[in-house]
Image (cartoon, rainbow, N blue to C red; front, side, top):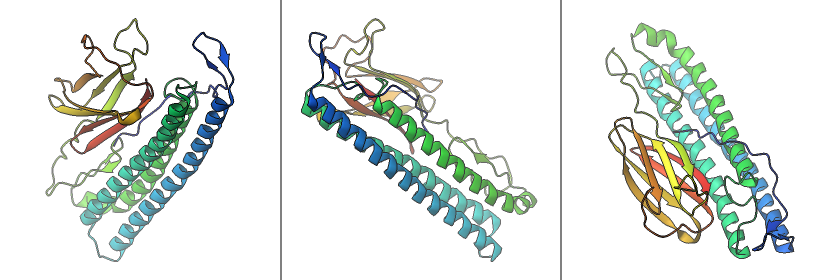
Length: 291
């Protein structure tokens, strides 16, 4: 479960946009749309805090119950490790789902506002150094904060079980990247390494180096070696495209939408914000990007 890192953009929303001839337009519809987007973002940030607080409280109580069960001899140390692993996997999923939900909610509002305006003012597209980018950076920061809080509680439980587990000769480790306690093997022995994390390397709104924002999306990432990664984009007006992309011996892949880089196929994606989702096995990763 990748905890995505998004760069913080500090530039505020612009109240003016450039017209067809480059002149400044200060119409009230733009101001109203800007105000509505800011209001939606503020509400989404509050919702995100509440959701992550609830997820953490549920996780904390689950670990406390496991600890109590061990003290009451209702669980063995090995059973406690398995229970902690399941609780931690659920917590990691909850953090990611809550973050994705609020990002999708704000993205839908922005798409609706730009559809009404007929164009996308400054700050309404991801990666234009505006309101969306600051919002996404805040989402990533809060998710990382709650990930660390949960990891601290997990380590406290592990410390309690450490002596018993050590006597049993079982290698128990915490995989920090996946934020999951590695389950013990059925017998003493080495723990098999986890699969490599599914992650983005880059998402850009151009295929050609000399042409910026050419109406296309180029996605680069890393997944299982010599495997397959499913890449899906969801954009404005119900635009949805899914591609199954092979990975090389190093797990790297690249795919373009609507066509592949270097492909002369005509056609561009509609302007707006796109949710890019990678899937491989039980791993997923999401990112938003403006075109």
